[in-house]
Image (cartoon, rainbow, N blue to C red):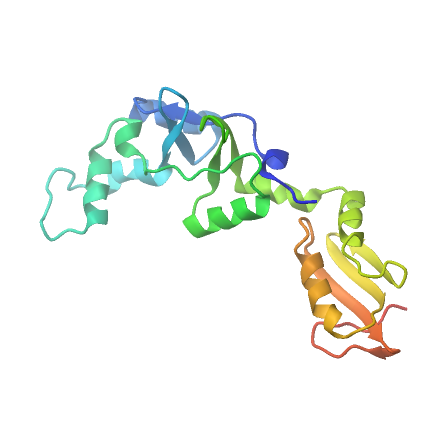
Length: 221
């Protein structure tokens, strides 16, 4: 069973309007205990994100109104943000969004690739913000009930009669016999891809011989 954003996301849409002032943004960040806010238009559609880094440019950038022709586009953008006083002027655009049906794994990859700690969640039919998913929300996949984890893993086992699993703090040990050595790697990768699995320890035998390989432990007793 794939865990989706709707299973872990916060139902509060942490956002400010484009016309929100610098002081309003700081106040909202302190109130919600977050380091970034989604900026929305009048229809509640995300148009950008304003972060603590964006706000701190007000202190770090002392050359706000003096622009050199030798500056890069990124430097000019920093000067613009440092001179900004509203969310629309301070934000980074466009907003990077996900939907409630986005797999958590994809949302995590997106946060990692874009180096952000949260993503606005939008309704696909309207584009309006309906919540926020944070990195800490995604960590909830590692607290799934063990029964759910077992059911998902057992569904992947090619021969449930000859294989068994043990789970300890998210680490899955697979015991038993397999018909072909080639099945081991694919099985381990499939189990490792299950949301909530921390690691996989294969303890498998083939024709009564332990399957060789650096990732294979001695067979189960």
